[in-house]
Image (cartoon, rainbow, N blue to C red; front, side):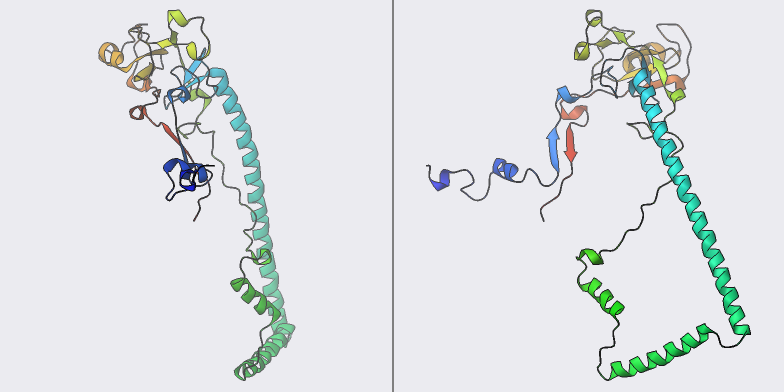
Length: 294
């Protein structure tokens, strides 16, 4: 057996690795995302597979058409259920409000009828309560404990709030108003099927029969590989090209250099850039929040 000073954790303070191994289940966990964990250009943001029949959202995210349609169908079904729950909640709120108004009206009628007929039960109770309050006040001034059981329980709630019996009830969870349409899984903005525009992604000739991560897409104008460069898509024609080529060959005349079709500025969508493992290319660190030791 080695000496204590040579044993793991046998000295103070802990090294970075020792403290990391000891407290790795607490606090915010961070991990560096490598290149292998980044989504390659031309891969669907939902299915993570190479795109065969592609569409682009207004935010510049590329999807496989079938994956995008399936996502919207599921989200619309969730919204329908959400809307039904919200409508039931509104109907219940309206029913309770109307019931409260009826009870209040009946109470006023009962009070008015009692006053017209002389001394009613409410007046008698108020006189008794007034007499009792005066008597209890006198006893309290003499040093007697006149607290009721309810007042003692309320006092116990203040001093023993950790007991399960005294834990405040949050009440029924309210259903918030649902949005009108599903949101984009990336930008969070409302997304409709007609907002998705078709794009034509050109594959490199060497990877035409490749699958998975081996698929490489190229610029329709220059034929250069599209990896982490800035690229744009012309939604009117579906052409995908490097942004530099767009500014050089298409932006001036607003004509698609491949198909010769005129387009407008609103038809140009900047595509989301793919990232590498380097910090300068985008977000390369993932975080997860876990309980912290105080």
